[in-house]
Length: 360
Image 1 (spheres, helix red, strand yellow):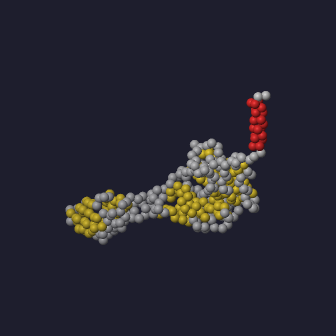
Image 2: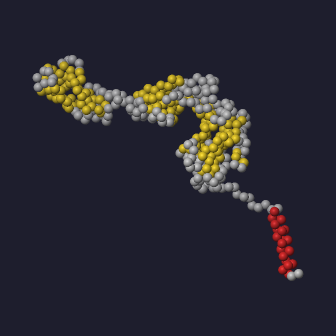
Image 3: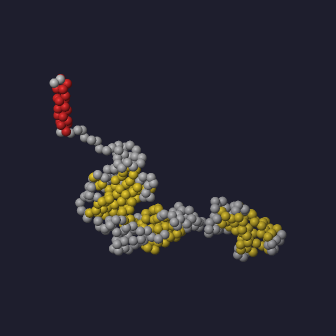
């Protein structure tokens, strides 16, 4: 046998032994996936209109802190219990949260779901909820390539009945403001009595078909408020809902029907001044110093015969400040002028100084 033939079997045997030895040794630990999206950090929720409304921000970074550009889907998982002890832990198993039920998903890829707005998701869960049960939620986020984030921090609340809508909502418009008042609800949505002071949220829209948006909340038990710094002569639409706090759970009831109110300018302009009257043959020419209000619409001219009452005899549109009263019978007269604004009410000022004349 040649030397080459003798070495070949030994080399093969050595390779087999090395391979077998390698099978028994553990290699270095594999690093966890660093390209998955970061977990959602701000999952929050409340009871609203018969369901549990969750909200959270979309992750913008991966676990390795690199920028996350393309998202795929958000998935919502839920567990429920009677409320004793700690809620079930959230552990990722394959592509799910172990021991939790998936209750919905939200498309994040273009075009995204309507539930996504300005980088936030608002998701409502109304699936088989029971008053008094504790519900724990967890969210997973997948990128466009299907890589799944770690579970979010858990959010837990107890499902409670929300208040019924407040009653007898009224709106009283004023100068750049609307005063609202209502009656507190006496029942919860499940028919049980509403006990304890409730907080109220004021909702407002600037068109009959526009969505209502929260603009204010009252202190507990307060059943009136004034919405200020509004635009006069513009129609505003209002609704109010009651909010119940039960432990750490916030429950918002359905809103009232909308009512409309129009703030109105009720402040008259300053009166004109320095009224001067110059008589001539059956004619009186008037002039005055103008009112300087920004919303000035014009002037109203009044005349009184002798000591009698003033009677309107004419008007002048701004910026005019003169008026000629014609066909005036001979005699003694008194004149005065008022200013009015451009509001719907045409608020009228006090009268100017009086000017007396004798018409020849």
